Amino acid sequence: KVTMGKPVIMGRKTHQSIGRPLPGRLNIVITRNKNWQADGVTIASGLSAALQIAEQAGAEEAMVIGGEEIYRAALPLADRIYLTEVDLEVAGDARFPAIDQAEWVAVHRSEPEGRDDQCPAYAFVTLERRRRPAA
Image 1: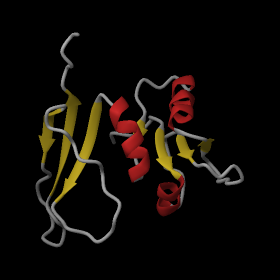
Image 2 (image 1 turned 90 degrees about the vertical axis):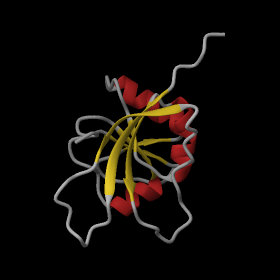
Image 3 (image 1 turned 45 degrees about the vertical axis):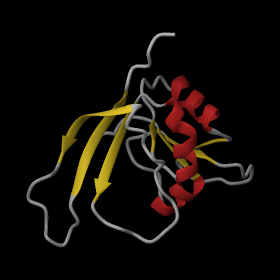
Image 4 (image 1 turned 90 degrees about the horizontal axis):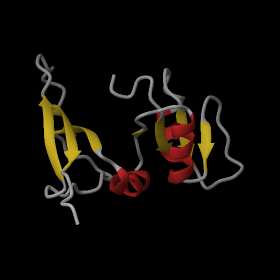
C-alpha cells in the first residue's frame, strides 16, 4: 500500500529477484550495464538519474526498495523510512544500513494482529529524520 502509485527505485538484482515490474508504480531500475533491458521498467544509470526520472514524473515521494548498495546511497538523502522489521535471522550478506538513532525517530509502529504461528513476528515502522540544528 505504501508504494502504490509512487515511483519505486531499485537495483537490477532486486528487480530480477522480484521477477517482474510492480504494478501500479513507475518502476525505475538502476544499473551500470548499458545493454541491460527489461520490459515495463525505466532504466537509470545511478541514483541521481533515478530521482530525476521520479521528479519529472511529478512524484512528491519516491520509494527506494533495494538492494543494499542503493539503500546506502539513498539513506543520506531520505527524510522518511518505511521499514518492515521481521523477527527472524536469515543467512546472507545483504543488509539494510544501520540506522543512527541520533538521526532518526520512530513516529509510527504497527504490529499486525491475527498472525499465523508459522509466520515470524513483524512490525511496520515509520521513521522520520530528526531536525538538524540550525547552523
